[in-house]
Image (cartoon, rainbow over all chains, first blue to last red; front, top):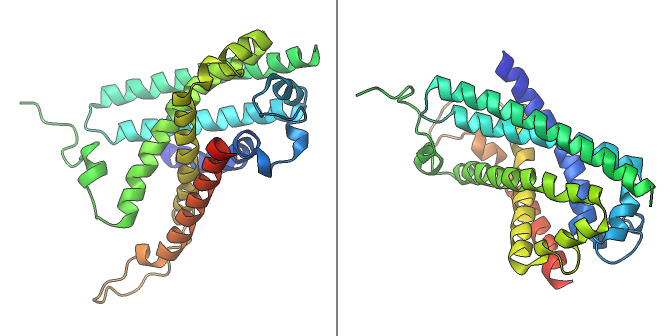
Length: 125
Length: 146
């Protein structure tokens, strides 16, 4: 039951990623097809001036954190599923489950801090 | 000799040789490979993009015009990640639809020549893969030709 619930969350997280990462890819790699307001300084999407401009928008801070959480869960649960199908012992699988959970939580905390701190730094410029 | 815990599991070998040899078998393998590739990139991406917290010097050292990550090899690698995303996303839509009971058709009598749910969903599969190819080509144009 627990795994079917987590699998449903895995699919739901995939849907969230599809929307938010789709938007991210549109802005970063298909700039010709995205609104100019998302890269207001012109040039490339990763130019510092554009990074600061997007950093000032609360929308990006919130969606970065949402995307971070959804992507970490989707990716690490997917990896855990792959490990679960391998010919290895239960002890190792359990260890991987705990290790991947801890890794996901740590990266989520770090990435959330970075998204909030980056907005603070951008607002000060 | 100790027995393997699951003798019926093929492990990673099963990605290549297990199950049927249908088109969907290769999509399954590619979905896993692209997923692992995207995950590896994403874990590094969290740290790389956090450089923006430390100001323009830190950011430009990595991603500025002369930045370390602007080398051709990284650009090609980034495009491969983009292509992996294009495939993984569109194939993921197919998998989610099948998981939720769409695209599989109604149960029918197993009469020869047998028709499976894969035959029912194959047109949608082809359409989604075609869409993935369009996204990958558009990305390639933006990455290398614009």
